[in-house]
Image (tube, rainbow, N blue to C red):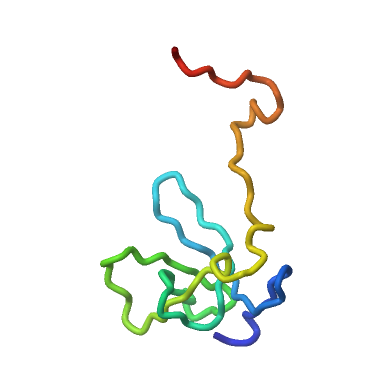
Length: 110
């Protein structure tokens, strides 16, 4: 990848590439995601530039046993290698009404 697409992790300072992680599961959305710039044989993602535009990198997860596209290089999420990854993890969000204290928590049936 070109040096112009590399950025630095704000926690550990390592070089990272940002790519839109394409999630094809129903109800899921695609989100920006950091990746280590160097290929890694343990990676489960590959990056590609739609239409050759490296400023709009996209990433796909490859399931075990699924065929890799020809020429694709395995990549690892920077969350897997960043020593400060815990700082960026978010707690599971509650439904909006509960966050605001508008609805009581559900009680499990006896």
